[in-house]
Length: 246
Image (cartoon, rainbow, N blue to C red):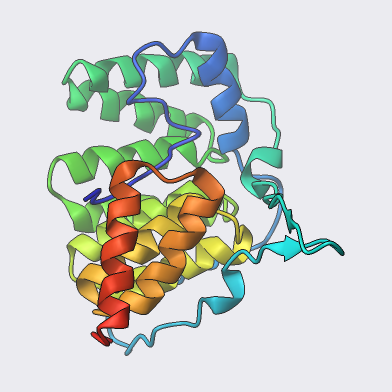
């Protein structure tokens, strides 16, 4: 079973063939627009009880025409990708260098270069997200959580930041909080495949709610297309639901 499926559209650290032009474009959409909006996920205080949020309203619904033929589902646009802002050329070059350093196993150099970008341009969320990924790789999920939250303060529309933050929260056992974070992503973009997939993981493995897990896995399959692994998992969820596990 897939454990965590994370689509980083502004961070191509896992893609060895990314060109400078591609990275520059990714940096463009990683920026925050000039706005006063706050992220939809609150800074984690750990002092308050967190209740699970309803998710049914974010599930995609297929429609039928007058002849009762299924109408192909048209997914809503990712609001994150609609953001555009020019980025300093020096920041783009540093971003490429940081990415290369991390890919080569030199996380110290990567962090140093990312921190230079942050000092020079406080309007970018991308560097904070990579710092969070590095912290996760170094088994420091608490620090990763802080980095992701900072990135979301800069750009609340960075939907990938919510899935990253939810992973850090899940690793720390904050399952209800992680669920709330993924719901925040769906509030921004209800057709976000990765948010639906990760909700399936939370509901199935950590919250013992297989019916809700099945709903969001169905949503993922509709939006992204299901591979064999997802189909097998969906079959298992269906069998458990029929057996009345929930």
